[in-house]
Length: 326
Image 1: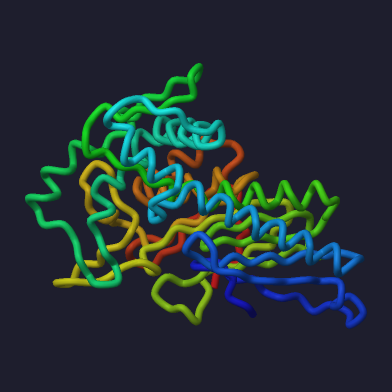
Image 2: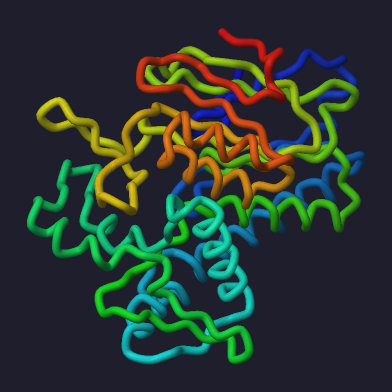
């Protein structure tokens, strides 16, 4: 068993010895997380070039979308968009449009302006904004403060102090871009994982990929195992970036309505056709909670969900009734 990412585990299948040489696997730390690529290729040299192309794409997107790099396009938007409308790339504009779509779909549970208060948390040092700072900042969290002009490809913030962070969608988008690059190279069996976001091409050479969902309160255990092919899967949990103070767990998934860490569930896993969708929805449904989250999933014909609630109970959407629960 190899740990692939927060919340997701890849279970290696036993394959004949002659097949093993054809599976290529590499890892790299990009976008603040561990990126893993595994693929099957008849020519190891071409396979390694394909993996390198995926890593290069992740590096390109990190340079563009990181809120921590002062020269990134996203950082430029955060510095300038409250002053006036600014021109942005078509790619960033598309991601802002996608973010708005999920904000509207989820009734504001997904909201990239959470960063207006989210940047005031430091999970390594256990720092958080006090109540007064939270009350002052909360009015800045509203996706409707972002004005997009489709004709000019510009963005403007309608209130000073608004900041955005694409952490709930960017890694999923990067995974999808990596998959597109592999498909252009006619690769038919592959997996790309970035943090809690993964997408699979094909199967594991005649067998499904087996993905394990980590038990939120036991890193050595799995809560469930999923046999998958041609699918995307994302897990959002309260157990990777967090600290505890006075018996309260503060983690990085912020409820836009309150400015505080979301409560009610320990993890949410979403399955759908692409990783941008699973990334955005796993965050959104974590914020919505188990009951409202499952109501949303039931409305979406292409989505399945596994929710582990605050008591550790595992809840599944109707399409996963036969799930192998541990």
